[in-house]
Length: 188
Image (cartoon, rainbow, N blue to C red):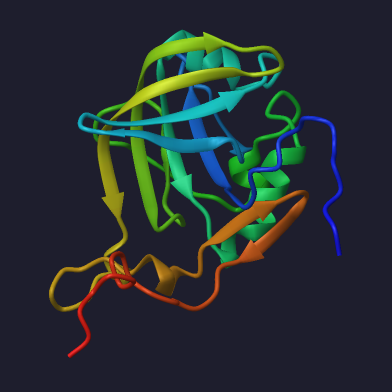
């Protein structure tokens, strides 16, 4: 079997699929799905999300310079999809998706109670790139659900059953196949 050659496109899959929660200066809140999100720096901790300017939450992020990235799980799959296809212009997605907004510690955007990890972010730069603008943000705080902590205070995201997105499909993550450095670790 050979390989097909395709025109340039985004084939970097799977991607994290996250729920991004926002609020404007009047306190109106919204949540929407983003699959173009990623880590960009560890010191200082920074992330990025890429958002189309026509998305309802876009103006909220531009206005406040803040948002929260909420990690998704199998139990949040329906809400994740819904928040990606419904518009906050037309409906309260928190209510319709049965998501509970809770107060963040630092930013004005709410966190999602049902998410195992909430990442409070403050925008440092915006790159206009074409179909999407990239919001480059510093992580201001991270919240982890104690339900997934072990007795040594280690967080186990895998127990939350996280999901990813791959070319139109949500996929549950599977089993662990190794740990960082296992390929060079000495055998005893």
